Image (tube, rainbow, N blue to C red; front, side, top):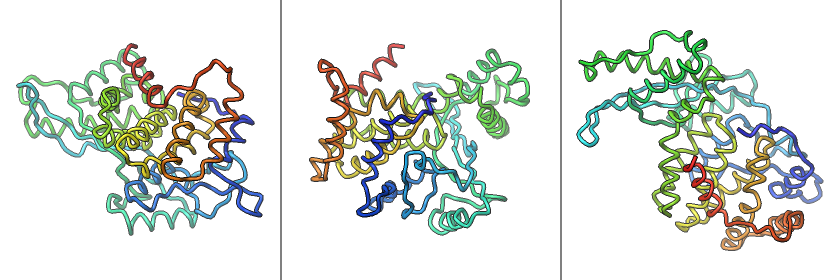
Amino acid sequence: MDTDDDISTLEEEEVSLLHPQSPGSGRSVSPSLTLDSDSSLDEIASISNQDEIVAPEVLVQSLSELVVQPRVKTVVFFEISSAQSKSTQGEKYVAYLVEVKHKIEISEAEEALKYTDSIEQNDTSHSSMAGGHMEKIGSFERRYSEFLAVYNALMKSHRSLMEEFIGFPKKVIIGNFSVEVITERCKGLERFMNFVYAEDVLRRTAVFSNLLYGQEIKKTDNLLLHSEFEEACPHLERTYILLQGLHWDTGLVLRILCQWIVSLHYVSEYERSCQLAEIAMAKFMAPGNKKVKKELFLPFLNFCNALWRTLGKDRSLIRAEIERMQSLRKKEDGVPNLLDLLRDEIALRTLH
């Protein structure tokens, strides 16, 4: 996970790409990440800024103001809402639907109250709760055997922590499709997910990360490698929203977002690709993204330059930044195409 919190002079200068100076103000204007042209993009922008609830007219003077102190606190919560019998290649099993939710704990600030009022009026996916609201941000299906594998692995690697958890559903030889067994497993697996996520050490383990989104990443990687962009887009959208909602590794979130942006471009959804590119631009500026920024930012800017040209948008700031960054590179260093670079990263992950 990228953890470098230093804000370099270079990064401060690059804020101008997102915040052109307002005439006569001497101050830079906050980017609008609310995308009115597409309701699903409204939701994406909202999720991308769960902890950055700011009025659109707010002005920012520096990069440090981009990361706004939250006015509402969100807590990730897992709920197993249903289970369904399935069959694959003659093997019958039960798939448990895990819903990932945010419990939004409400502060006394007026702005937070306005925010929750808007949730109640406009979004039926939110339900009232004591002291806050529950908001669904994603879901995925997993088998009991996958939960069991994670439990066993964590018991080996972090026994002292895992011994605090009591009640993991036991494996049964007979009756594992009965209503009683499935009901008890739903309760126990739900408690297990929430226990692990609440412990930072357990939450960040590779085995738990793989349970949360490993299948989704493999699916999108395969689609991107085979240029199946149209099929990749909905998968990338769900994966991005899930990772963003989990407050996960910022570098991985940004890479998935870039994959989605490129895929949209290759299916000629230029406007939507552009709108998401503006969100990605803001993420590249975040202090925790220095590593991924160093690897992807110039190829990303080249991509944006071509996309802006296609849409007839003003690209003077992007072109100036590209020229400045290229002047700092060695002449023999080439700049890879963004899609090629993303595919190379996928290939390297697959090898390891």
